[in-house]
Image (cartoon, rainbow, N blue to C red):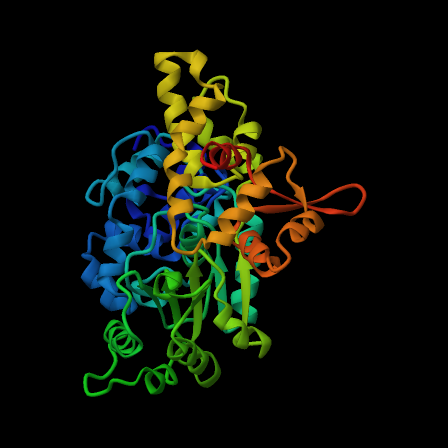
Length: 438
């Protein structure tokens, strides 16, 4: 302790330091990096500081221990290891943090923030929402999205049901996960329920009840949800759609279940889908639900992905893939490797396009694109600058609804010309893929 500065030693004794005083240093450090600790991450760190198990702290906080374990599965320790420039795990956290404070590597905003205990100091004083069901998606490589987080937060606060739509890889799950981790919502539990196994409605009710620890002798979800305010996240709602001609529809009983949840209970629902769900229009028209389409990242938000990638025109790459985070990460990883092998490859658009071609092939082979959808995309791709909306409708008079779907899914975008004419276009790499396969 001899290296401790005079100013710090006059305000706090490291040997006497409690968790709330210590964590202030971590909060200040990551705040400077433009992020913040979630409530559950702080609970994980407190368990490490106090040297208690996740079961013990989970019982004290009424948090599912498995939820805490998912947060402690590596990402929080990976972030702290980078923060402190040393390997950090649960057993070594207290020592590593103390030594970083002692050496002056970490500093807090003000001495007062360290010398005063807060109301959140004891295990049983702080509340945190309990996560049940599937693990929250990883957000350690979450970039930008400040405005989208704000938008989604306002929608969740204003509507009982939010239908979040976006093309594969656009970051829907990450956005919802980040929202839950960083925003305070008055929910007893957050239930993340994937639907990719296509359960029927009766089976879904049973599974939701089991995850919420509902009564074993009951198979009805609604009476249980009336008792507490929960947030249900139905992930992959598009996977339960059925093809009927050119339309993809959902069993009306699913809509009835969601409608009962939002109209008869205090609980809320977020539905995640790669395509619009027209059957939910009844909820939207009644004012209980709203649809929100997630678009691509801005170039300024994607710049950090390309740290260490020499010679990459980030703005050009972002425009080429429509800001899709999944595709940007693939190109960023490839570009960092290519710099070591042959730097001349980095800005070669044909090579970059090859990195993401599998994604385009998956999109075009997906169930949610009809024959007409593919014809529309081919027509849009014929011109480098897209096609006027009126001209597209002239070629396909009955396609207004399908064009709206393509726009809602983010597969096409609308740009207003100086003349005020709406123009429909697709991103550069998708256009080249369409032309190569038309």
